[in-house]
Length: 272
Length: 315
Image (cartoon, rainbow over all chains, first blue to last red; front, side, top):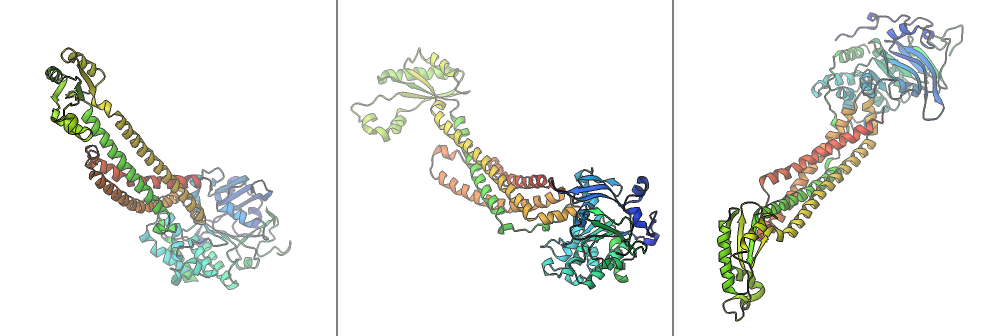
C-alpha cells in the first residue's frame, strides 16, 4: 500500500494559513463544514473528576487530518486531562466530542476499541509492559489487532530500526535508558499506522538532543499523513516545527483567542 | 533521517489485517507451578475425584443390594414343635411354588442355619448333641418376579395362613432399610462435598483472577489504550487460568486416582460381599475422568466471567 505524501493529500479548507488557529480554536467554522473535514471536534466540553471543580471547561476546537498540533500550558493546566479525552481514556462531564465523524460520547463502550486502534498514544511515563522485550512491546498493537506472529517480525524489526533500537530488540524496559524507552513507546504508538498520534510530554525525560530527534520522528510521521498532537510545556520545542498549530491551555480553558501563540507569533499582538 | 522515513513508510505501508483472533498470553507474567493456583486446583480436583469415586462406589453398593433384595422375601415358620414346623414348611413351600408371582422358593437347610448361629450360640444350642436344642424357625427363601411391595406381602401371607398358620412373611429389603438410609446419606454427603469443592474452587479462581487483574492493571490499561477489547483481555486471563487449572487438574487427578485405587484395594481385602459390589465400572471411571475436565472448564469460565465483569467498570 503506497502512502500518499502530505502534498498529495486533499487540503483541509483553511490549511496552514496565517491565523488558522483562530478558525480551529473557538469554533468559528459552521458545524457541517467542520464535521465533514475534522478528525476531532470538541464542542463546549467540560470535565470534572467526581464532585470536584471543573479541570477543563468550555473547550471548543477542531483538529484536522494531517496537521501538527502543540498543546501547551503550565503544569496543572489540564493538558493531560485533555489528552485523556482525546485518547478515549475518559468521558467528559459535559459537551460533545466527535472523532472520525462519530459522536464518541454516546458511543457504546464495545465500539471504543475500534476507535482506539486508530490512535497512537505516547504516554509521559512511557507505559511499557515491564516483562516484555522492546520487540514485544512494539509488537503489542499488532498482536492486539490479531496479526499472526509470523507476520510480526518484519514490521516490528523495521520499526525498531526506524527508532534506532535494532540492537536493543530483546532488552526489557528496565534495562533501557529513558530515551530508549521513549523511542520504544513511540514505535509502539505508530506501528499500527494511527490516524492520530497523541504524545504527552514526549521530551520531558530526555536530553535536548534526543528531544529534537524525537520531534523529527513525529514530523516524519506527520509527513506521512498522521495528525500529531504533542503536549508540552517546553516552548522551545514549538520553534522546531514551523508548520505546527498551537493550542494553549490555562487553568482548564483554551486561551489564545488572537492566535498570538502560533509560531511564528503575530507581531501585532505580541510574542510568546 | 530520510532513510528512516523511508523505512517507516515501508513499515507502515504494509496492510495489516485486523482479525478477531486473540493472542498475547505472554502479556501476563506467568508464575505457573511457582504460583498457588495450580496447587489449589490440584487439591480441589484430588478431593473431588476421591469424593466422586466414593459416591459412585456407594451408589453401586446401594444399587446392587437393592436389586438383590428387592424381590427377596423370607418366610419364617415359627413353631416350637419340630414335626409341626417341618410339616408347615413343606406345605408352605408347595403353595409358594404354585403361586404365579413367585419365581423361586427354597427352604434354607437346617444345617446352614445352625452354621449361621454357631458363632453366637455354639453346638450346644443347635447341634445334634444339644440336649435341649433351641427351636430355630424354618426359613424359606422366596424370590418374587416383581418387587416385594406392600401389596405382594399380604397376598402371600393370606395364601399361607391356611396351610402354615405359623408363617411370618418379611421382605428382606425392610431389614436393610437402615443400611440403605446410611448409604443414601453418604451419597448425599459426597454430592455435597463435590458441590462445596466446586464452590471453593470457583472462589479460589475468582480471587486469583481479581488479584491478577489488580496486579496487571497497568498492562490491561495499556492493552485497552491500544484497542484491545474486553473479550481479548478476558481471553488472556481465561487462557492463563485454564492452563494453570490444566496443570493442577492433571496433578490432582493422578493423586486422586492413586488414593481411590489404594482405598479400593484395602476395601477389597475386607472380603465383604457388600463392599465388593461397590467396585467401579467403566462408566464410573468415565465420570471420574470428567472431573478434571469440568474443573478446567469451570476455572476458565469463572476467570473469564470475573474479568469481564471487572472490565465493565473501566472505560
